[in-house]
Length: 519
Image: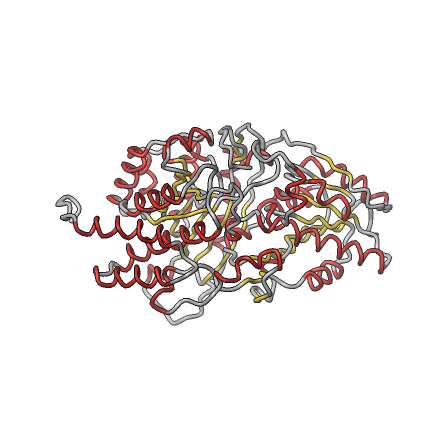
């Protein structure tokens, strides 16, 4: 073991196995938070984000428990790719064996493995089990810790392969980890702690990409959720109390980030281009779920960033990809966001069915949604509106009705197939999650958890939402739309009634005279 006064710590994000994996899911902000905390206490810390290690993406076999998806995985003809489902199953990052080898090479005192979603718990546990074997075979002494949102919702799933399981926020687990690491005797008791966190939130960020002179940054500046939506697990990790990074600390951190970017040499070695193309660009994605509860705070920091970027000749833009509650938006706020260079408006609708929303303890107002989308279009701010397909009591009719409704608005459709998370009010049976693999608990698995829509209907809904987006972006004539309809009906993996319902509404819309206000 290293000097007990200065621990060598490796914070690990395991590889992911899924049909797709987007970069914003690999920002590992939790690991960056803990790394900054550990370093401030005098420890040496290394982040190993396996999802960003080579090979970045490798096709692997479909797991047996997902074999029911086999018939849906095929390559679409070129002219139908805008309507497709997934084709292949992948591992994003190196194998478990290679990841374990990389960790071992650090000769750590502590290995803290994060699981950012319950749906990826199996890969997390496989890595922990491999590290446990490495420790036994090599007679090396390092403390094994598991934490993160996926661990928090089902900590008992990880006790057999760890020394310590940290549920909830991890900042105040530091002292416990330091004490255990100093002893050097790890019997794999799998002790579970939930220390909570009442301190000031730190400002952390992750620079996800540096392409030429464009810097893409991910951050989160608030935690907690006071809402009571039955389908959301945010509160299981961060609690019901809404908290934010102190404004002074946030401004100081943003100033440091901007200065860092300003001092970075232009990474482009291309031939001279136009002056505006040579300017550095900073795009920040705020991953907050509830930032609009702090409107004035959010606007103040956005204005501060814009001002500091202007002083450093940096172009600033931002998004909130986790979605904003449209009920908290208005035209004045959209005007301000436009002036601050919002790139895209991500809106969370959940459902258009008012009775469904009541069951899910969620509020909604379609008139307000339409007003926000209409005004964002007037401001040339692209909008994406998300809804959940497969909520309890959902039907194929309601689903297509929602898709057709969103098709009629100037918004891209974002469809999320429903999946449960252990610990939600309506999913308290822990045995259910021990009897079924975590991989079923993700939208891409299209598992009929609520027994209201079949896998076929869920995938049909997903593909019809994509078809809607394709029609909007490509603006095909009626002959091409008829061709799309015919080819989708010929696809035996699609639900014919849902297809007919969808296209009936599309053709009715086409037959109506153009609105002079929008034409």
